[in-house]
Image (cartoon, rainbow, N blue to C red):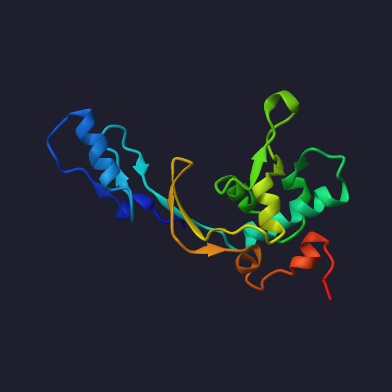
Length: 172
């Protein structure tokens, strides 16, 4: 049975019906368990997201798809990952938050599930660029990050074989 996220949230106890006061109160209480908005009743919360092994492995798999088929501009990531242990959960989409993947614009065809690595994403997969290990997200927008920086190898954490995922050769 799913836990009710509102159970631990903070509820507004004030008497003001001023929207500015309500907005300020919600902003002050976004961290931790979050706050229930006094205006609409929705749970408002900042989420801490990690550049973990599943996100990094998904990015490596996207890299391999483009390496093997450079003629493709976009890849259907859910289809690419189907049947693998990365195939459920949508961790690949968290790459958007770090700016490591981008979704296909509508004018270029179907958009749902179609992505490609950004220049920063390629740099991350190749080990040339590090990213914040943890970011803070509210309403799908990054609000900030912690100072620790990780490489793709740190993020994979030994749970996946980098060379198998990317199709790159081991050097030496």
